[in-house]
Length: 312
Image (cartoon, helix red, strand yellow):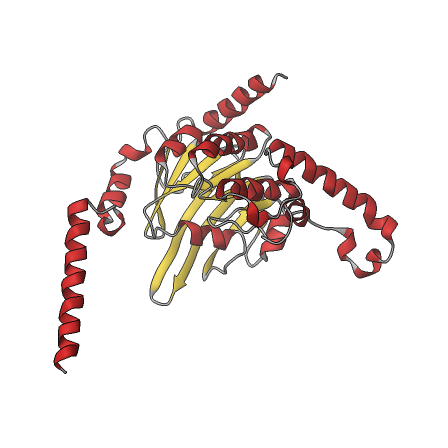
């Protein structure tokens, strides 16, 4: 099948899955790959996450949006084993993932990237890619003593790494230290490394943060390409133009809870969403006048403090 036709088919199938769905938080999906129930995470007296029920449709690109402090990254951390939930349960492909450590979550086919990339700076780009592979025979002490056992697998891993580097246009950097890459190239490396395990679900935490405009289109293309290759994508993002461009469905969080779901074309006109964004005044960008007033207030307070100290 022609690649373009397949791309259209995948997109059409994803949109068909969401057709006629209710716009309520936690709406059941036709074929969910990830199902979350009553997940709660508290830090002291603050409830950072309190998600009643949410389902992620297989084969789709779902955006997770919400004001700053809505709990999106914390929620990602619970689901992928990087943090421990205080309550709740979730299943991936029908298998319970409660309390499963991060490396085993990845091994099961559910991988994530981070807002701040986790590339190991003092390793080369190729070495970073190799580290992304799971179940390496050479890691076992007894097998490591028999080179024939693990050398063939190591060759396979290197071959897959090389293929992915070509796909992500990082092959020219294969022997460079990861620390020498630009912010956008590190994002590409992290996405490529995540694919070393042939995942079914890829979770991207703000894939566009810190990426220069020249690489933005390239990254967008790669995210869409994940769906074309049969993967499911769940991503956190603030850029609404990007959300509208690539997502099939949008889930909105505010104050730790899911407050709305819907297609990207209509979600921002939903009253609940407008309320969450505009009601959270502290999350809205300050106008120049407000910023100036805050600066003057801070300067006045500092001057008063200096004067008080001088009089003592």
